[in-house]
Image 1 (tube, rainbow, N blue to C red):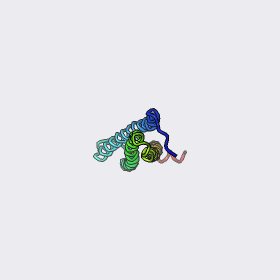
Image 2 (image 1 turned 90 degrees about the horizontal axis):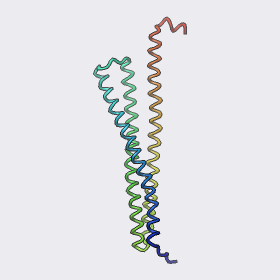
Image 3 (image 1 turned 30 degrees about the vertical axis):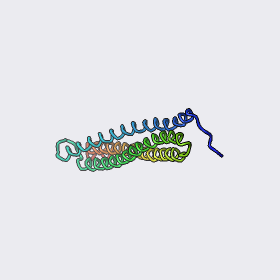
Image 4 (image 1 turned 60 degrees about the vertical axis):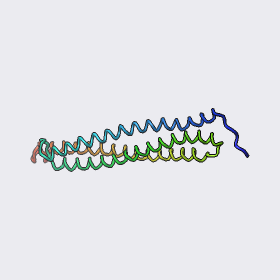
Length: 175
């Protein structure tokens, strides 16, 4: 059965779908770039803090525990940074595949619908890349929340430790 000829408007209509994916993808690129910036800023702050504590420039107590905590935080930030890097790279490649899908649709019409597999393949690849990026972003977000809980727990423990030490050894028996 021969393929039905398409009008120019059918081609333009078909090209709208990749444009919707492009818009969604662009939003993810912007938000992921913002997440990356926040992680980079946090890494810089913690690196500076580790440097100052290591040189004895601060008056922090429990230096060893703080340095251990900061080392753990930096390790977690490094892991998060990798997830964001994978996601951002994948999002840019997905963006490229959606642009390619749109162009392939136009070329397919000019070729008399002989390239139908090309735009479909590009679209499927783009959606798969979006899925991969989204999984990495979800993993990164979960780690960010886990890290927040650990940081809160660390400072609660420091507070409790200071409180028990300020009461002295005799006051703990009364508790």
